[in-house]
Length: 184
Image 1 (cartoon, rainbow, N blue to C red):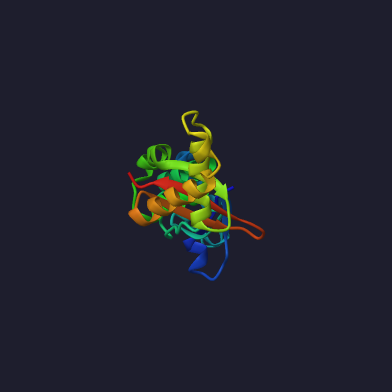
Image 2 (spheres, rainbow, N blue to C red):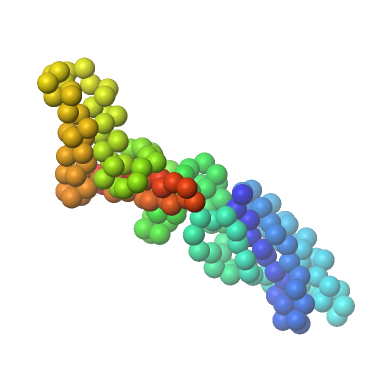
């Protein structure tokens, strides 16, 4: 679950670590309320009779490689967390890195996502996608049906080299997953 560590700068500037880990998968106003409560509990502000008002995001967790700034808006933090909850994290990170608007990412994934394949290479993943498409057809002559793996691999080769598809690779401890995306 994506979360952020928000620190009180009043405390930080006085050499005191005071902050909270906050669930990012909630409404931006709810995040702000938790930050306000953390600031209200500032030991430095209480000690000197001040009010702690400034904060910064000093850490974050489970954002799939997406970088956050110290003063990232809670609207963006919340929107990213919702996307990461609802969509494949690797694809969200890919489209964020590509500079896409957060509001457009669900449609981009919906329009371009062709499948997810646990294969050893990009070529094998795209070929697996084509094999699925070919297996669903009833109009393939029997003499060609015996060679569908080779046909699927040739189609995959053409798609990759011709720019028809793109893959996002996610390496796990024991397997590799490829998300196949249409470039159209």
